[in-house]
Structure formats: C-alpha cells, structure tokens
Length: 436
View (cartoon, rainbow, N blue to C red):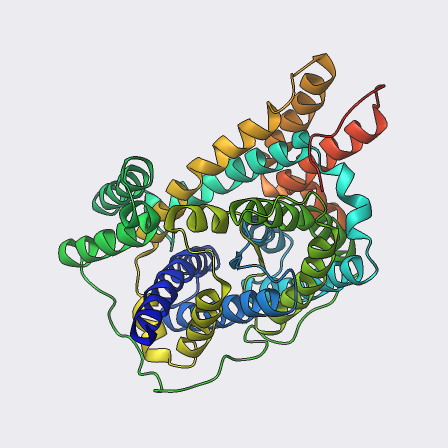
C-alpha cells in the first residue's frame, strides 16, 4: 500500500509539475523578444519566473485560498509590458528604464491587492465584475496580445522586418499541433497539448534551422537575482495604472476560485473567505514578482480544466510540484536549456492557448440576453478599446506620463469603459449572474 501511495504521489506530482512548467515557460520568451533581451537575460528572467510561480502557487495553496490553483504569468501583465515597451521608448525612455518602472508597478499593484484582501474590500467590489465586464476584458485581452504573438510566430522580432518563412511554417505547425491535441485528443495527450506542441516544435526547429550559439557559461547553482533590471523607478503616474490593474486582477482570482471549487465538488456559493485571502496573497505575490523582476502572477482558471481532465483533486501533489519548480530555479544550466526554446514556437503555443479564451469571452458576454443596453455598452467599449490599440504610439507622446500609460492601453480603456457605463446606466431588476 505504501508503494502504491508513493507511486501515485510521484505520478500526480509529475503531472502537476509538467502543467506548471508548460504554463510558465512561454511568457518569459515572449517578453524577452519584446524587450530585445539576450539569451542570458532571457534565461535569468526564466529562472526568476519559475521561482516566483512556484512560491506564489505554494503560498496560495498553504495560506491563501488553500486550493490547488496554478499562479501563472498574467495575460494583463503581458499586455502592460507590451504597451509600455512602445509608449516608454516613444517618450524617450530605454527598455531598461521601462523594466525598472514595471518593477515598481507590480509592487504598487501588490500593495493595493493586499489591502483589498486584508481589509475585506474584495468581496464588496465583486458586483462590478458582471459577465459583460469579464467577457469584454477577455476578448480585448486576446485582441491586444494576438498581434504580439503573431509577430513572434512570423519571426518579426529582433530587428526582422519581413516574414521568416521557415520559422513561420514551424510556428504554425506548432499552433495546429497544440490546437488539435487540446481539441480532439483524449487523456494525457489533451492535458499536455501545450507541452507536447512545444517539444515537437522545438526539436523540429533545431533540426531545420539550428540551435542557440555562443551561449555563455553559467554556474551550476545560483539564487534568483533581486531587482535584476536595476533599482525600481517610482512615479506617481503609476498609481492609477496599479489601482485599475489590481481591480481587474480580482476577476481572475474570483473566476479561478469558483471554477476550481466547482470542479472539486464544493457547491457552496459563499466564496468570500477564499476571495479575500486569495486577493491578499495575490498582493504578496505581486510584490515578490516586482522584487525578483519577473512577470506578476495571478490564479489561472485553466487549473480547473486540468483537475477535471486528470481527476487529480488532492492538494499534496500540487504542493510537491510547486516546491520542485522552485528548486529547479536554483540550477541555471537546466533553466538555460529550457530558455533556448525558439521565440516563434513559444508564441505559437501561447496563441493556441488563447483560442479557448475567446470562447470564454463569448460565453460570458452571451450569458444573459443581449438587449439594446448591453449591445450599446459592449459596442462602445470595443470600438474605443480596439481603436486605441491601432493608434500609433507617438500620438500620445505630448500627453503627461499618467495619461500616456492609461489611454494608450486599449485593454484598460475598453474594460474601464464597460465598467463605468454599466454602473452609470442602471436599469430596474438588473441582475448579476455570478454568485459569490
């Protein structure tokens, strides 16, 4: 019996570890491409990402919402990283300076989230996250990030101005492998679709194009570096961005907690305690991400799908997997090997995973009948949110830094508009479909 228990724990821990790894590996490569980081810098970002994902997931599982939910790099933060890379450089700042500003932004956002959770404010602002708001947020997020991912798939990074044919072909091959496995495959093939797609794409890329060259030697063991991009740069203009990002991040926390509790068979509609504790520790985790110059993490609702697919409902293997991910972060050779995944392949895997997010957006928006009021609200938010994404970054260059960072981000503009209009334009007997 002990042997069976050990075997079960080992297999379940390994499955959780692969899921954690597959959900963490692509974002650092995408951010590295946007900010033109070299291989060693991407490896360092990957190391810090593994560490922060591991510690964030562990803290939540043990002391926060206490559920087996992966804390992964947040899509909204990739959006903020992408937009600020453009607007800050247009304003005369360097990539390094922008990354230092982002360290501060994550720390300030973490402070807001901690206060929202500790003071139990989270449960009081939940009613603003109606299906219309979350649906609009998810769809605008996919629109904004799809451009970044598609450029990466076509090889339009690191100074390239034309489509790189072979790279693009392999990227689309990876995209359809991930999409096909996740849609049509059963069991572990579906569960590990992203991981399998990355492995196949990575190997094929190396065989046809070649591998990373001139990699510098790395030490066998080293701890993740604090403030790797330099000391954080604080600016008053970051406070509104941090506040809005914290508000929007709560929707991720709520959606993940509700989805996982339902998957675990816990039917209670009162999630206020988990939401408050989860928000507070999400704030701590944002601060950790800022200190370690990583990408801020939020609870990912995809954890519910993993639990439902594999039937793994025990928290113990999840905890072991988070510890294992943290330990790997202290061994740079392993991290460097993983970091050599080609950018087109990583972008393709992420693009495929966002297909389901589009479906989630549509499901949320159509959860209730779309009357003229809801259509008007969504239409205004989409037109101005998406329209902002297509404006050249230089049109905002004469505005104050605060206005640049807020108005130039179509995701924040669109989501802010739908929240504002829906709260101002009230109707009688207007019901919120979410139960908390």
